[in-house]
Image 1 (tube, rainbow, N blue to C red):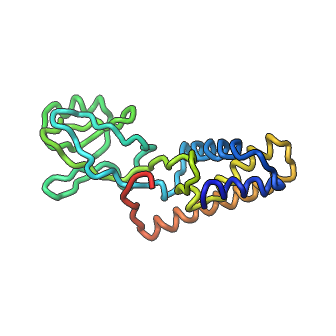
Image 2: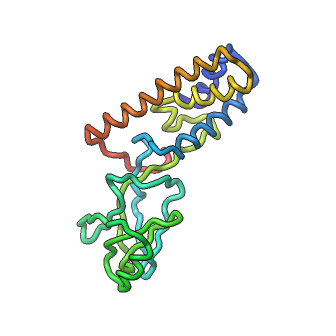
Image 3: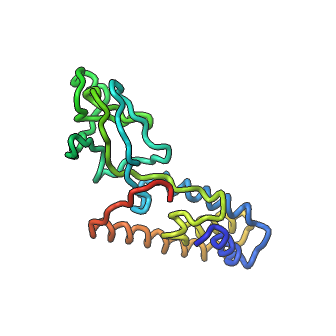
Length: 207
């Protein structure tokens, strides 16, 4: 579903209220940001690190991607050496500094302030792989992002609740609340089903 279609849906449920396009769009963007800061995230936000995603010789630190939310615990950071992929253990930065003063192939890392700190110190350029939750494209233009592709009802209902409250529309509030509850259940069920089926995340950026 395109953004403008979702906006029209909100206004329709508000009794075909017009002239609120900009407010609805802002409410949808705020809803998306709220959802992407939640404890539970949907599987459709999982993507692989871009290829190449590499270390730098004699540098401990690798910046996370700009759209990084957090790691996916089932596929955290890995290092590839001679086409063999090995999982990197996660630990406290202070411990790693003391325990691994030398250089070589990284075997552990810490994640601090949106940066990976790898130990031992990489002695050459190593490829890193893994899966993380990425922020989706904001609805600044009339596009279909992943939220509108997979669960448009969630953004529609969350924006609708904000709009109904601001317009003092007591009749629309319970309608949007019911849609939101059903949409949240849909996200949870889809994510659980996909995980149970062993689905793989799609490689790519903000598509």
